[in-house]
Amino acid sequence: MEAWEAIVLGIIQGLTEFLPVSSSGHLELGKAIMGDTTVPEESLLFTVVLHFATALSTIVVFRKDIWEIISGLLKFKWNEETQFVVKIIVSMIPAAIIGVLFEEELESFFGGSIAFVGAMLIVTAILLWLADKAKSTEKKVSFSNAFVIGIAQAIAMLPGISRSGATISTSVLLGNDKSKAARFSFLMVVPLIFGKIAKDVLSGELTSEATNFTTLGLGFVAAFIAGLFACTWMIALVKKSKLSWFAIYCLIVGVIAIVVSFA
Image (cartoon, rainbow, N blue to C red; front, side, top):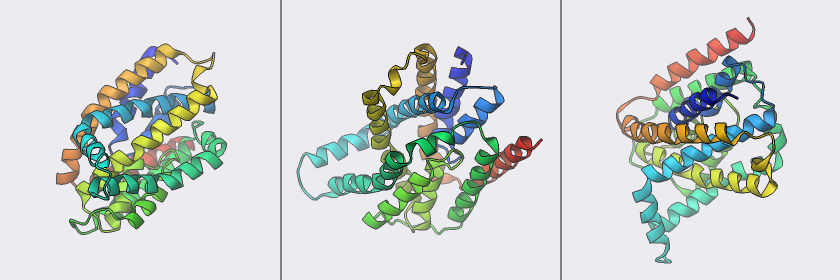
């Protein structure tokens, strides 16, 4: 992979991680367009590194919320902050189970099958369209909601299914406030990403001789900077806009991807 390709893919990851349009799906489409011949395992490694960068950008954007949560936990009481953390842990269970038991099967989907990505983008479009029809409320995410949202996050491990789109849509369809749904969606993925990085480091996957650390570094920086911008923008956008905008976009890109794959 060339340096400019790593930067482009990093920007794509940073911009699409927080928008409900599937960052993993766009990365796979980007690799296919640029003729990337990376094997699935190496392709997944690069994807994980870019997700790590956007996780850091999430921490920077939500630093005040995270500090409040930590401060609340240190009081050792069953307060709102402690309950929020427990909900995050509950939401992690489905994805953690799928990630551990079906890791090799998941890796096989990151091999440039743009027809599959296109089909999953259409599924994302349907989810966003359904969520757009939901009524606005001020309801907070409950413990049972957290587990259901976690299942949506586990399904979103497939390229083309937007993680933020699936989790925010599921939360909204469960009757939760859109702003609270977005906040929970962005924060719930951070522990999973750091867990995945820790697992890869311990297993030696990130120290492969075939890895080009220069391209990984460039992609990381590009994703981090783009992620800061996209996360901040999305927080403001989700309060004012409709998810149907993104549904239309995912539908168009999904159809184009399927058509091109059979051309």
